[in-house]
Length: 79
Image 1 (spheres, rainbow, N blue to C red):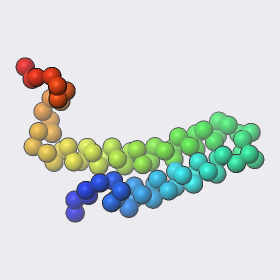
Image 2 (image 1 turned 30 degrees about the vertical axis):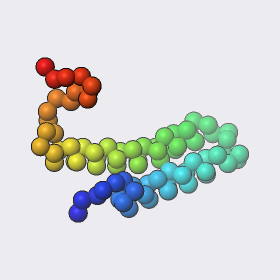
Image 3 (image 1 turned 90 degrees about the vertical axis):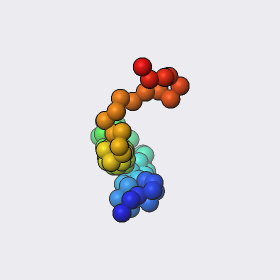
Image 4 (image 1 turned 60 degrees about the horizontal axis):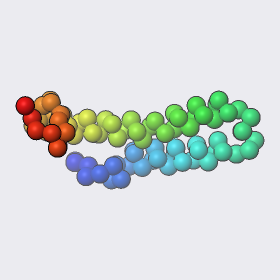
């Protein structure tokens, strides 16, 4: 099954919802005293959807015929 976009991937959707819930939870004033813990929780929650997107992108690139070709900027000609 090919995934057309990240929004079609249920695991990514759920990780985004979880990240939003963690951010809302850590913004409560009662947790404000523990800034370092809240910051760590937010960064961990936000890394999940980002990591999922990175894996999907890597898999998609690995399946393409030029996956290991050197990447060049579209405006710069290849030498």
